Length: 518
Image (cartoon, rainbow, N blue to C red; front, side, top):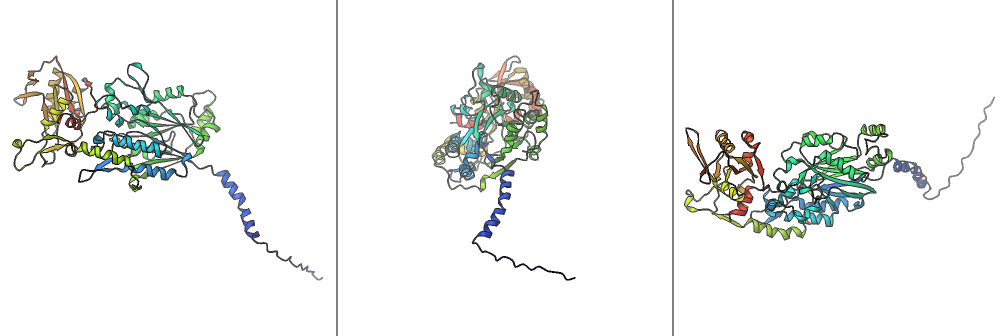
């Protein structure tokens, strides 16, 4: 048997220009469609600025003001948003001014207000929260500057039951979603604020959030809450929050932040740490699915866990993680500074004038040879007592650098005098005697300034105390000024616990020099 093989000639190939390329591209169409379906639309971004603490200027060796890093922020934001402005939301956490930095003290809000104006005009800054440092500008008047009334502070009630002068919440829109911004401040951080002398009442943060939701039901898809609070207060606030809330924590300078670094943005509710605003800019990329899950998939169940028919879906959402955010901290030192706005140049001359204003002339007769001077602790105590209209002032003074200039100006003061806060206490004569006795036993190893009274010793103990030339009366009440080395001194805490704290608040030794030593 023979096998029969069939031979077929293959059809001749027809060469059509670009046909093969077209066929290869058509094969990619399903892949492209799949990517479009699987990959959501581009995330919208939240840019968080502020927390400058007054670091907007420094001084060169010739006394001229030099712009600080925050002036780089407008150019950096514009670079991040020039192609994506409609999907970008820019907010500020406040803490713009600062009384503990020489540049912040001397500018007295001038630089901060100028930079804020640039951000609003050029970078689309949509909302500003208030920080404790922002009330520094009210230290001499006790009344916040008018422009602060447009800033957000949620947990405050105005004096005498009147309507609050601060905005409670700001509603904004980005990428088709409604975004809210609230702001909570821990009362502990406002003890030295000038507002405490004006009758403002601070509401419990958790209660303030519940009230806000009751007053604005279903007003936002996501609520960002700025937290100017200590760690314990933040952790307490995090218990039981609904899933439409995101926290932006602005810790005080002395607070540890290690506990939140590993969990930031990855738990319920997400928590982000706001860096120092003169060092870095915080940007948060928010995937639109975070909002879709909240408002579409679960309806109102995720934002209203107390409703009777939402327990199962709310529990399901609570068990989900949120891998739909990305956080970046952009260092300001790497950003361009070629476009420093003219606003800084306009304020630099005013800062320089304040810095070089003569305050005091050292006496040559009281100085040892060679010509060198140190700041005397008694001089600080006298200025503090006069500034705060007190009966007695007690201050400390660390050994200051030798000063070879007889004329003292604010530039010199801010270099060698620590910006210690001052407090006024109302003390009965008997409590004052016990406080001074304890102070003599456990005084810090630094020189102590004492003004407005006199102490006499006998056998290592206090024999007699006089205030304003009169022996103290145990029943009479006295206004006593202490700097923070003393009111934070643990040995004196039992004697100050029952004392009444008096206004004015927020003043420092720098204020005493600037106001009274001319």
